[in-house]
Length: 376
Image (tube, one colour):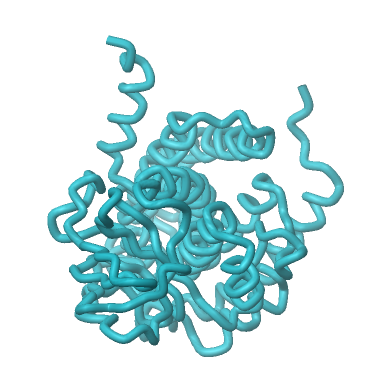
Protein backbone atom coordinates (compact mmCIF):
# COMPACT_ATOMS: atom_id res chain seq x y z
CA UNK A 1 0.00 0.00 0.00
CA UNK A 2 1.54 3.29 -1.16
CA UNK A 3 0.73 6.33 0.99
CA UNK A 4 3.01 8.75 -0.85
CA UNK A 5 1.84 11.63 -3.02
CA UNK A 6 2.66 11.28 -6.69
CA UNK A 7 4.96 13.72 -8.46
CA UNK A 8 2.12 15.88 -9.76
CA UNK A 9 0.46 16.09 -6.34
CA UNK A 10 3.76 17.16 -4.75
CA UNK A 11 4.09 19.87 -7.39
CA UNK A 12 0.55 21.08 -6.73
CA UNK A 13 1.12 21.07 -2.98
CA UNK A 14 4.19 23.27 -3.37
CA UNK A 15 2.32 25.67 -5.67
CA UNK A 16 -0.64 25.88 -3.30
CA UNK A 17 1.63 26.51 -0.32
CA UNK A 18 3.55 29.27 -2.08
CA UNK A 19 0.38 31.08 -3.15
CA UNK A 20 -1.30 30.70 0.23
CA UNK A 21 1.67 31.90 2.24
CA UNK A 22 2.66 34.72 -0.11
CA UNK A 23 -0.76 36.05 -1.10
CA UNK A 24 -3.33 34.94 1.49
CA UNK A 25 -1.57 34.64 4.86
CA UNK A 26 -0.29 38.25 4.95
CA UNK A 27 -3.87 39.46 4.40
CA UNK A 28 -5.49 37.19 7.00
CA UNK A 29 -5.52 39.86 9.76
CA UNK A 30 -7.06 42.35 7.31
CA UNK A 31 -9.66 39.78 6.24
CA UNK A 32 -10.62 39.26 9.88
CA UNK A 33 -10.63 42.95 10.83
CA UNK A 34 -12.48 44.23 7.76
CA UNK A 35 -14.83 41.23 7.71
CA UNK A 36 -14.37 40.44 4.04
CA UNK A 37 -11.84 38.89 1.71
CA UNK A 38 -9.68 41.76 0.39
CA UNK A 39 -10.30 43.09 -3.10
CA UNK A 40 -8.40 41.20 -5.74
CA UNK A 41 -7.59 38.13 -3.66
CA UNK A 42 -10.23 35.86 -5.18
CA UNK A 43 -9.30 37.14 -8.64
CA UNK A 44 -5.67 36.23 -7.94
CA UNK A 45 -6.77 32.79 -6.76
CA UNK A 46 -8.79 32.34 -9.96
CA UNK A 47 -5.74 33.21 -12.06
CA UNK A 48 -3.99 30.29 -10.36
CA UNK A 49 -7.00 28.06 -11.24
CA UNK A 50 -7.80 27.62 -7.56
CA UNK A 51 -11.48 28.57 -7.77
CA UNK A 52 -12.18 25.88 -10.32
CA UNK A 53 -9.75 23.32 -8.91
CA UNK A 54 -12.02 20.23 -9.08
CA UNK A 55 -13.93 21.31 -12.21
CA UNK A 56 -13.25 19.58 -15.55
CA UNK A 57 -11.01 21.32 -18.08
CA UNK A 58 -13.93 21.62 -20.52
CA UNK A 59 -15.38 24.20 -18.12
CA UNK A 60 -12.01 25.91 -17.64
CA UNK A 61 -11.32 24.10 -14.39
CA UNK A 62 -8.04 22.53 -13.28
CA UNK A 63 -9.64 19.04 -13.08
CA UNK A 64 -7.77 18.16 -9.88
CA UNK A 65 -8.44 14.89 -8.12
CA UNK A 66 -9.84 15.02 -4.58
CA UNK A 67 -6.48 14.32 -2.95
CA UNK A 68 -4.98 17.34 -4.73
CA UNK A 69 -8.05 19.44 -3.91
CA UNK A 70 -7.66 18.46 -0.27
CA UNK A 71 -4.03 19.59 -0.39
CA UNK A 72 -5.28 22.94 -1.70
CA UNK A 73 -7.81 23.30 1.10
CA UNK A 74 -5.18 22.36 3.69
CA UNK A 75 -2.89 25.16 2.52
CA UNK A 76 -5.75 27.67 2.35
CA UNK A 77 -6.88 26.69 5.85
CA UNK A 78 -3.34 27.10 7.13
CA UNK A 79 -3.15 30.63 5.69
CA UNK A 80 -6.67 31.89 6.45
CA UNK A 81 -9.68 29.78 7.38
CA UNK A 82 -12.11 32.50 6.25
CA UNK A 83 -10.67 32.48 2.73
CA UNK A 84 -10.63 28.67 2.71
CA UNK A 85 -14.32 28.63 3.64
CA UNK A 86 -15.25 31.10 0.89
CA UNK A 87 -13.47 28.91 -1.68
CA UNK A 88 -14.94 25.66 -0.31
CA UNK A 89 -18.50 26.97 -0.55
CA UNK A 90 -17.94 28.43 -4.01
CA UNK A 91 -16.22 25.44 -5.58
CA UNK A 92 -17.21 22.51 -3.35
CA UNK A 93 -20.87 23.32 -2.78
CA UNK A 94 -22.10 25.66 -5.52
CA UNK A 95 -19.98 24.78 -8.56
CA UNK A 96 -19.83 21.04 -7.87
CA UNK A 97 -23.61 20.92 -7.46
CA UNK A 98 -24.10 22.51 -10.87
CA UNK A 99 -21.55 20.11 -12.32
CA UNK A 100 -23.25 17.07 -10.85
CA UNK A 101 -26.94 17.96 -11.08
CA UNK A 102 -27.03 20.60 -13.80
CA UNK A 103 -27.85 20.21 -17.47
CA UNK A 104 -25.25 20.76 -20.20
CA UNK A 105 -26.64 24.23 -20.79
CA UNK A 106 -26.47 25.10 -17.09
CA UNK A 107 -22.89 23.88 -16.84
CA UNK A 108 -21.84 25.93 -19.86
CA UNK A 109 -23.68 28.98 -18.58
CA UNK A 110 -22.19 29.02 -15.08
CA UNK A 111 -19.09 26.89 -14.59
CA UNK A 112 -16.54 28.69 -16.81
CA UNK A 113 -17.37 32.00 -15.12
CA UNK A 114 -17.18 30.33 -11.70
CA UNK A 115 -13.76 28.89 -12.49
CA UNK A 116 -12.62 32.34 -13.66
CA UNK A 117 -13.83 34.00 -10.47
CA UNK A 118 -16.19 36.20 -12.43
CA UNK A 119 -19.15 34.56 -10.72
CA UNK A 120 -19.02 33.54 -7.05
CA UNK A 121 -21.43 30.88 -5.85
CA UNK A 122 -23.41 30.39 -2.63
CA UNK A 123 -25.51 27.56 -1.21
CA UNK A 124 -28.85 28.30 0.46
CA UNK A 125 -30.23 25.27 2.27
CA UNK A 126 -30.67 26.24 5.95
CA UNK A 127 -33.79 27.99 7.23
CA UNK A 128 -34.87 29.33 10.64
CA UNK A 129 -36.76 26.09 11.34
CA UNK A 130 -34.70 23.77 9.13
CA UNK A 131 -31.09 23.47 10.21
CA UNK A 132 -29.95 19.92 10.94
CA UNK A 133 -33.21 18.64 9.39
CA UNK A 134 -33.38 19.92 5.80
CA UNK A 135 -36.53 17.88 5.17
CA UNK A 136 -38.33 20.56 7.21
CA UNK A 137 -37.68 23.24 4.56
CA UNK A 138 -40.61 25.64 4.31
CA UNK A 139 -39.52 27.82 1.38
CA UNK A 140 -41.82 27.16 -1.57
CA UNK A 141 -41.42 26.97 -5.32
CA UNK A 142 -44.76 27.23 -7.10
CA UNK A 143 -44.93 26.44 -10.81
CA UNK A 144 -46.35 29.25 -12.96
CA UNK A 145 -46.15 28.38 -16.64
CA UNK A 146 -42.52 28.18 -17.65
CA UNK A 147 -41.37 29.76 -14.37
CA UNK A 148 -41.15 28.95 -10.69
CA UNK A 149 -42.09 31.50 -8.05
CA UNK A 150 -39.95 31.16 -4.90
CA UNK A 151 -40.96 32.42 -1.47
CA UNK A 152 -39.34 31.98 1.92
CA UNK A 153 -36.32 32.79 4.06
CA UNK A 154 -32.89 31.20 4.04
CA UNK A 155 -30.42 31.72 6.88
CA UNK A 156 -26.69 31.34 7.38
CA UNK A 157 -26.00 31.72 3.67
CA UNK A 158 -22.24 32.09 3.36
CA UNK A 159 -20.87 34.18 0.44
CA UNK A 160 -24.29 35.81 0.17
CA UNK A 161 -23.20 39.41 -0.40
CA UNK A 162 -20.49 38.48 -2.93
CA UNK A 163 -22.36 35.75 -4.78
CA UNK A 164 -23.74 36.12 -8.28
CA UNK A 165 -25.49 32.74 -8.23
CA UNK A 166 -27.26 30.86 -5.44
CA UNK A 167 -28.11 27.19 -5.18
CA UNK A 168 -31.50 27.40 -3.47
CA UNK A 169 -33.65 24.56 -2.15
CA UNK A 170 -37.43 24.88 -1.88
CA UNK A 171 -40.60 22.81 -1.66
CA UNK A 172 -41.94 22.36 -5.19
CA UNK A 173 -45.12 20.42 -6.06
CA UNK A 174 -43.04 17.25 -6.47
CA UNK A 175 -40.99 17.71 -3.28
CA UNK A 176 -37.84 19.55 -2.26
CA UNK A 177 -36.11 20.78 -5.40
CA UNK A 178 -32.86 22.61 -6.17
CA UNK A 179 -32.60 25.73 -8.32
CA UNK A 180 -29.73 27.89 -9.50
CA UNK A 181 -30.84 31.49 -8.99
CA UNK A 182 -28.90 34.56 -10.19
CA UNK A 183 -28.40 37.26 -7.56
CA UNK A 184 -30.09 39.71 -9.93
CA UNK A 185 -33.32 37.68 -9.99
CA UNK A 186 -36.30 39.91 -9.09
CA UNK A 187 -37.59 39.12 -5.62
CA UNK A 188 -34.24 37.88 -4.25
CA UNK A 189 -32.93 40.07 -1.45
CA UNK A 190 -29.77 39.64 0.64
CA UNK A 191 -30.72 40.47 4.21
CA UNK A 192 -29.13 40.75 7.64
CA UNK A 193 -25.46 39.89 8.02
CA UNK A 194 -24.63 37.64 10.96
CA UNK A 195 -22.10 39.11 13.37
CA UNK A 196 -19.94 36.07 13.95
CA UNK A 197 -17.36 35.20 16.60
CA UNK A 198 -14.97 33.82 14.00
CA UNK A 199 -14.72 33.38 10.24
CA UNK A 200 -15.34 37.11 10.04
CA UNK A 201 -14.11 37.23 6.46
CA UNK A 202 -17.05 35.08 5.33
CA UNK A 203 -20.15 37.10 4.36
CA UNK A 204 -22.96 35.19 6.10
CA UNK A 205 -26.44 36.63 5.56
CA UNK A 206 -30.11 35.82 5.57
CA UNK A 207 -31.69 35.52 2.14
CA UNK A 208 -35.26 36.66 1.45
CA UNK A 209 -37.30 35.26 -1.42
CA UNK A 210 -40.36 37.40 -2.16
CA UNK A 211 -42.17 36.19 -5.28
CA UNK A 212 -38.75 35.50 -6.76
CA UNK A 213 -39.28 34.34 -10.34
CA UNK A 214 -36.84 32.02 -12.07
CA UNK A 215 -37.20 30.14 -15.37
CA UNK A 216 -38.09 26.48 -15.04
CA UNK A 217 -34.85 25.82 -16.93
CA UNK A 218 -33.01 26.91 -13.76
CA UNK A 219 -34.17 23.80 -11.95
CA UNK A 220 -31.32 21.44 -11.04
CA UNK A 221 -32.26 17.82 -11.57
CA UNK A 222 -35.85 16.71 -11.26
CA UNK A 223 -38.49 17.87 -8.82
CA UNK A 224 -38.11 16.06 -5.51
CA UNK A 225 -34.39 15.36 -5.93
CA UNK A 226 -33.29 18.30 -3.80
CA UNK A 227 -32.45 16.40 -0.63
CA UNK A 228 -30.29 13.85 -2.42
CA UNK A 229 -28.52 16.64 -4.34
CA UNK A 230 -27.90 18.54 -1.08
CA UNK A 231 -26.72 15.39 0.69
CA UNK A 232 -24.07 14.61 -1.91
CA UNK A 233 -22.94 18.24 -1.96
CA UNK A 234 -22.56 18.30 1.82
CA UNK A 235 -20.59 15.05 1.75
CA UNK A 236 -17.98 16.64 -0.53
CA UNK A 237 -18.02 19.84 1.50
CA UNK A 238 -17.24 17.88 4.67
CA UNK A 239 -14.05 16.57 3.13
CA UNK A 240 -13.01 20.09 2.14
CA UNK A 241 -13.74 21.37 5.65
CA UNK A 242 -11.73 18.51 7.14
CA UNK A 243 -8.76 19.41 4.95
CA UNK A 244 -9.05 23.10 5.85
CA UNK A 245 -9.25 22.14 9.53
CA UNK A 246 -6.02 20.19 9.14
CA UNK A 247 -4.34 23.31 7.81
CA UNK A 248 -5.75 25.47 10.61
CA UNK A 249 -4.48 23.01 13.23
CA UNK A 250 -1.04 23.11 11.63
CA UNK A 251 -1.12 26.91 11.70
CA UNK A 252 -2.03 26.90 15.39
CA UNK A 253 0.78 24.50 16.16
CA UNK A 254 3.27 26.69 14.30
CA UNK A 255 2.15 29.80 16.19
CA UNK A 256 2.51 27.95 19.48
CA UNK A 257 5.91 26.57 18.54
CA UNK A 258 7.26 30.00 17.65
CA UNK A 259 5.93 31.57 20.84
CA UNK A 260 7.20 28.75 23.08
CA UNK A 261 10.66 29.00 21.52
CA UNK A 262 10.91 32.75 22.10
CA UNK A 263 9.07 33.22 25.40
CA UNK A 264 11.29 32.79 28.47
CA UNK A 265 10.20 32.05 32.02
CA UNK A 266 12.43 31.07 34.92
CA UNK A 267 15.48 31.67 32.76
CA UNK A 268 14.64 29.34 29.86
CA UNK A 269 12.28 29.11 26.86
CA UNK A 270 8.93 27.70 27.94
CA UNK A 271 9.33 25.08 25.22
CA UNK A 272 11.76 23.31 27.57
CA UNK A 273 9.04 22.82 30.21
CA UNK A 274 7.57 19.32 30.23
CA UNK A 275 4.00 20.51 30.74
CA UNK A 276 4.27 22.67 27.62
CA UNK A 277 6.01 19.90 25.71
CA UNK A 278 3.09 17.58 26.40
CA UNK A 279 0.75 20.02 24.66
CA UNK A 280 2.87 19.83 21.53
CA UNK A 281 3.29 16.05 21.66
CA UNK A 282 -0.47 15.50 21.90
CA UNK A 283 -1.11 18.01 19.13
CA UNK A 284 1.37 16.39 16.72
CA UNK A 285 -0.26 12.99 17.22
CA UNK A 286 -3.73 14.39 16.57
CA UNK A 287 -2.64 16.35 13.50
CA UNK A 288 -0.92 13.35 11.94
CA UNK A 289 -3.88 11.06 12.52
CA UNK A 290 -6.11 13.68 10.93
CA UNK A 291 -3.75 14.03 7.96
CA UNK A 292 -3.96 10.31 7.21
CA UNK A 293 -7.74 10.27 7.65
CA UNK A 294 -8.20 13.22 5.27
CA UNK A 295 -5.85 11.84 2.62
CA UNK A 296 -7.34 8.35 2.80
CA UNK A 297 -10.90 9.67 2.60
CA UNK A 298 -9.99 11.88 -0.37
CA UNK A 299 -8.36 8.89 -2.06
CA UNK A 300 -11.52 6.83 -1.56
CA UNK A 301 -13.59 9.65 -3.03
CA UNK A 302 -11.31 9.56 -6.07
CA UNK A 303 -11.89 5.80 -6.32
CA UNK A 304 -15.64 6.27 -6.04
CA UNK A 305 -15.77 4.14 -2.90
CA UNK A 306 -16.13 6.75 -0.13
CA UNK A 307 -19.23 6.22 2.00
CA UNK A 308 -21.11 9.12 3.63
CA UNK A 309 -20.11 7.90 7.09
CA UNK A 310 -16.43 8.13 6.13
CA UNK A 311 -16.80 11.76 5.05
CA UNK A 312 -18.73 12.44 8.25
CA UNK A 313 -15.97 10.81 10.29
CA UNK A 314 -13.30 12.95 8.66
CA UNK A 315 -15.24 16.13 9.34
CA UNK A 316 -16.09 15.13 12.92
CA UNK A 317 -12.49 14.29 13.81
CA UNK A 318 -11.17 17.39 12.02
CA UNK A 319 -13.34 19.79 14.00
CA UNK A 320 -12.27 18.19 17.27
CA UNK A 321 -8.59 18.20 16.40
CA UNK A 322 -8.54 21.80 15.18
CA UNK A 323 -10.31 23.04 18.31
CA UNK A 324 -8.16 20.98 20.68
CA UNK A 325 -4.88 22.07 19.10
CA UNK A 326 -5.90 25.73 18.92
CA UNK A 327 -7.06 25.61 22.54
CA UNK A 328 -3.71 24.20 23.69
CA UNK A 329 -1.78 26.79 21.74
CA UNK A 330 -3.83 29.61 23.30
CA UNK A 331 -2.81 28.17 26.65
CA UNK A 332 0.83 28.10 25.54
CA UNK A 333 0.55 31.82 24.79
CA UNK A 334 -0.89 32.48 28.25
CA UNK A 335 -2.38 35.97 28.53
CA UNK A 336 -1.08 36.85 25.08
CA UNK A 337 -3.31 34.17 23.61
CA UNK A 338 -6.29 36.23 24.73
CA UNK A 339 -5.06 39.23 22.77
CA UNK A 340 -6.17 39.84 19.20
CA UNK A 341 -2.67 41.09 18.46
CA UNK A 342 -1.55 37.47 18.19
CA UNK A 343 -2.72 35.25 15.28
CA UNK A 344 -3.61 32.38 17.63
CA UNK A 345 -6.62 34.39 18.81
CA UNK A 346 -8.05 34.55 15.28
CA UNK A 347 -7.27 30.89 14.62
CA UNK A 348 -9.00 29.87 17.85
CA UNK A 349 -12.13 31.88 17.00
CA UNK A 350 -12.21 30.56 13.45
CA UNK A 351 -11.82 26.85 14.18
CA UNK A 352 -14.74 26.85 16.60
CA UNK A 353 -17.08 27.08 13.61
CA UNK A 354 -15.76 23.80 12.20
CA UNK A 355 -17.89 21.82 14.65
CA UNK A 356 -21.03 23.61 13.46
CA UNK A 357 -20.91 24.38 9.73
CA UNK A 358 -21.40 21.63 7.20
CA UNK A 359 -23.48 19.80 9.78
CA UNK A 360 -22.83 19.89 13.53
CA UNK A 361 -20.56 17.35 15.18
CA UNK A 362 -23.66 15.80 16.73
CA UNK A 363 -25.17 15.25 13.28
CA UNK A 364 -21.96 13.60 12.10
CA UNK A 365 -22.27 11.28 15.10
CA UNK A 366 -25.83 10.47 14.03
CA UNK A 367 -24.62 9.56 10.53
CA UNK A 368 -21.91 7.34 12.00
CA UNK A 369 -24.26 5.62 14.47
CA UNK A 370 -26.86 5.02 11.77
CA UNK A 371 -24.21 3.43 9.57
CA UNK A 372 -23.62 0.89 12.35
CA UNK A 373 -27.20 0.27 13.44
CA UNK A 374 -29.18 1.29 10.37
CA UNK A 375 -30.47 -2.25 9.91
CA UNK A 376 -32.20 -2.38 13.30
